[in-house]
Image (cartoon, rainbow, N blue to C red; front, side, top):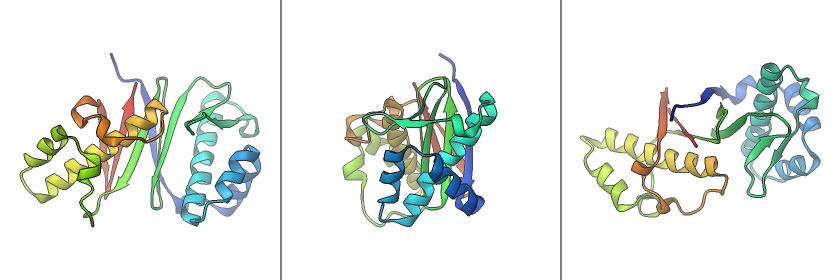
Length: 193
């Protein structure tokens, strides 16, 4: 089975101007806009609006549809999709960096800024097989990168399924067919159906 990934984008919040922000809010479905504006953290609000703006712009270009005619909706479990447009996408952000992936198949993307961990979250995230994968790392830097591969692959996997991010220990990293990209201090992971 071949990869159907059409493409992925990496953007930062400073590429998003106030006019785009207001325009995107105007074009959002009322319930989605209400949900986004209720968020306490302004960064989360801004990145949600920015993510939708990127998706709408890309779909507008690809399908030659006016941006005003593109409606983004969410499934019962919050997986985004475009009404009446035959393409799948996934959005993720970490701090002020956003990743969006597009595919003909179901897709999930996750992005994380790679930084030292303050707590040992491996207990909540890793299966025994995952711990074995971490244990064979040659040094701490490689072990950290392996940990982020596990984490982002699992989050992207659940986004692809559209189930919401549930029990991260319910699947091992070696069971997920993930594509990893390293960009500066970020790891971007994409999982397709």
